[in-house]
Length: 155
Image (cartoon, rainbow, N blue to C red; front, top):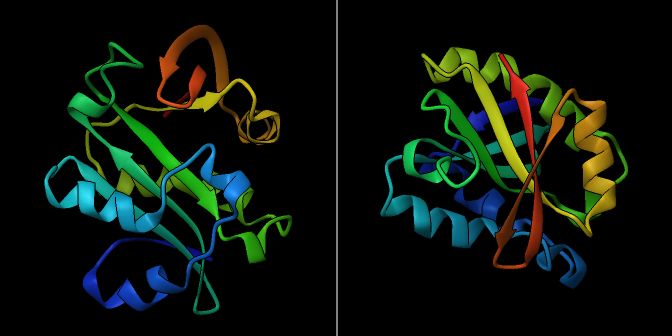
């Protein structure tokens, strides 16, 4: 599996990506994320592709996107992290998160922290993030879809 920054030639994979209603309670669709990225140069859509299949999608957001969650100007925020529902439970999300620190170092110079905010009700995601080295420092914020736990991974 490899991580890629979105390019137009990946659009067909985006169109085939599937999320359940349950997943959509906690995340946005790749199409919504791509629309937001068109208007914000600090949003970068990231695709995890395994054997030609898009298995995980998320956004890395710099600058203004991080501010509600961290005072660190050198942090980058993971948003809209999801796994195609046909590929859940196969370890792809964990693998993408494990590849992410090196990917960030390679593509986003000067970043020294990866931040994310996970819904307090999304216990499966919280467990995954902890397994991948993200730390809950006790920070909580309100999001559109409820209370969020802010987690951090220092590079």
